[in-house]
Image (tube, rainbow, N blue to C red; front, side):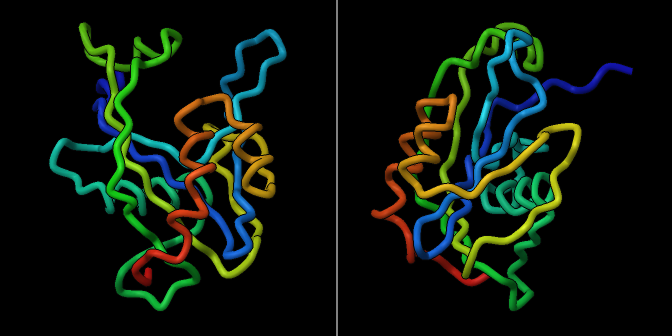
Length: 163
């Protein structure tokens, strides 16, 4: 059974501490030549009408096991940075989208946690994680938009709503 095409609207969630340590995840789908793809939490909407915030909360839970829900006291703060990146989809992932789709819109979020914590990786998506100071985390990311979002972190840290 063929998976449905991905919606070209996604979130990027930079998970960080107040001290600006950032969680980065190693993707399972390296290039086969030894390259490793490290990134923040990312993921597409499940439906066009899914809210950006719900997509961010869902992706964080799916990829790290960290639950962020409005009705809980929770362990962190989620912030919609109200920034979007529009970029060409990497050629190796175009087959996941409908024919003719070549660009993606990515909404940026931050999730501030009180401190570094262990995570439960989804083994279908990631094989390892690291907490790094934000400049090192930005250097580790393969995606320029992800690196730029992490470098913007000092500007956005602390602006959030409880989750």
